[in-house]
Structures are given as structure tokens and as C-alpha cells.
Amino acid sequence: MAPQSKPKLDVSVSKPTPYTFDLGLLLANDPNPLSTSTPSDATSTSTEAAGSSAALEAQLAATARDGAQALINQLLTTLPLATTTSGVLLTLPPITTPLPREKPLPAPKPPTKWEQFAARKGIKPKTREQRRAKSRTYNEETGEWERTWGYDKSGAKKRREEGMVQQDWLVEVDEKKEREEKEAKNKKRRKA
Image 1 (spheres, one colour):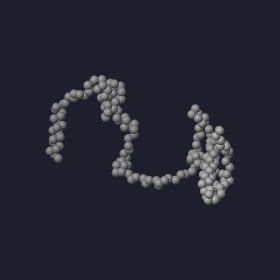
Image 2 (cartoon, one colour):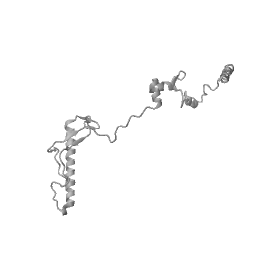
Image 3 (cartoon, rainbow, N blue to C red):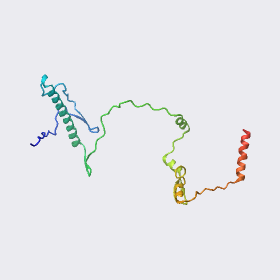
């Protein structure tokens, strides 16, 4: 025996008061009153309490179906359709119904001491390009941009892999200049 299919319902929905739509939120407002106390086609006897709740569920399901059908009809008739390889696309309009926030807007945080100081002195944070330009230098020997500090500084990793010796592994010290700097440092200490 073949299962009985449900009858196809009409795609046009008519209500005494028409729906209002906000297609940006995919919202359909139904201003018509909804009777949840007693369904229109159920009797109010005590033996049919289970049948009454089933009828109420059926009434609510029919109302929800009508709202969804009205929304889909409105979408398909008012919005431009675009056919692509992935399917048919609708472009939604901007939202017209303002939605309330759950919580109020947070109060603006007071500026930190550094932010106050920076504002007084006119200090502005560096941009990404300024930081990047400072962090890399051009090596004319290799023809590449190398990091100035941090990981793989001056191509150290590449040189290690190739078995090359660090360029400044031996630095010649000027003893006379070093002695003069030390004496100047000691003079400052004695004066203070």
C-alpha cells in the first residue's frame, strides 16, 4: 500500500491584515491576533483534551507555515535574482528594523597615563610600514632584505646552514681609544 502524500498547500497567503516585512533580517511580522486558548475547530469537552492540544499544535504549525510562505513569496517577487554556478542568489536589502542591544553600551575607558602623555607630546603610534622598514635592512652582498634583530638576524640561519662563518666573529679593539673612554668614565664618577 503506497503512503498517502499530504495535499499541496496554496503558495499565496491571504490574511485580513497583511504582513509587514524586513527582508534584511528575513523577518515577517504578522499583526493578526492568534488564538491560543481554544483552536477554532476543536470542541471543549474534557474527553478531547489531547485532541485539543493536537489541534492547537496544528493551528500554530499552519500559522508558522503561512508566515514562512509569505516571506519566501516576498523575497522571490521583490529582490533581484542572480544565477551563478553555485546556484541562485538573492541580495538582501539593508536592515530597516532596529534591534535592541541586550546590554547598554560600555562606558569609554579613561585614557592610560601613557596615552595622556602621548597626547600632550604629540606622539603617534608607528604604522606597520614604519615598523617593517626599521626591522629590515638591505644586504648588498646577497641582494636580499634581512632582519635587523630577532630570529634569523642578518641571515644568520642561512649562513649557518651553508657553513659560513659569522662576518664579525673577530673584532679588532683600539686599546688607546678604550683606555680614554675608561678614564673619562672614571672622571665622571669622581666628580659625582
